[in-house]
Length: 447
Image (tube, one colour):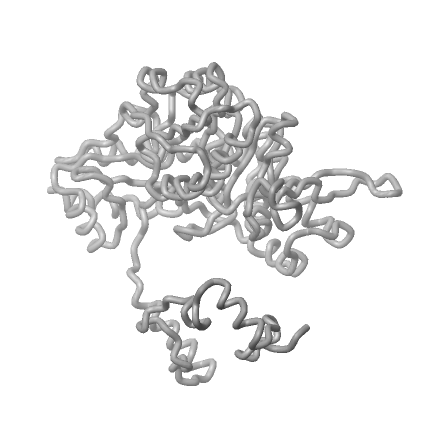
């Protein structure tokens, strides 16, 4: 150690001479020149927050939160609100889970490691694929990781990543960000009535394609009917077939492995977590081939034996750059999503196989029944797409969609306006009790 820096930090122990030498090497005069912070957000040395008692602080926060709109949400498009049993809160809040970060020391984290092993096992059973990691950040980053995995696999020589034109803008943006700096290029293929346009896709897929991505259900709630075709096209041209879905939908829709999916990504936060419109849980499962095994991002929990022959759990694969040489790392995903994966596993275990299938079937039923009730209203056509739907659907309205959404908001309900004359409606068990009032309000605002 050569002493503290001029700023007095014990964590950057540079002398004035060392600091000057580094600044000279990068061609700036002082440390201030390294930052471009607007005056409006620059810290001036004071937070200007008056001291308050606990009681006054709680009252202030309550008053602030009280200004939020009190709306019944019929929103979806990637964020889904299902009832989370209280047992999930009580069990996941145990100190053994809350205080555990990454389980590097298996001898003190057997319970948590076993829970994550069960989470992986559930994904394996639901997807039919042999390998699942113990979670990603969210569906968007899982999709990005699938694309970079495709680029790493030796059997893939192409650089084009094909995604449907309906792909959510947020997921498309994250995917574009992921492939920046690689040879991969993201391209769009068209859909027909919110399903894959098989003939156009057939013309687009050739040896230059590294990955083909499809979703089931789609962002507009439709059940994709052409997955076998997508899988065959990808396989015929040695491209990776990645399927996007969510953990509840997997309880009733086609098993991904049966339609030729190489990788499954998606959202797991529909179970175990309240809808946060940002924070989530990413699913990632793939074929149990050796070439895939060494390229899976994140970490894998495996089962082994201790020196007495008893079953023991441990992190068996960690391909993050925190753990291995950067040039061999598959991903820079570092934050631990294990606790939210634990909650999802607890919720799934609470439901059991029959309960998960019942919940998934209810998602089909509610969408169908709600669409029929809206379709009976004057000036409304629902659903727009002549397909089976899961949880949500798009309805066409004669009036401008933004006006309908705004008027519904005034009545206490929130929906997505997705086009000039289209709104999207999502129904789950949490907003179903408000459905009668919602239909009445819909009828009023669309007259």
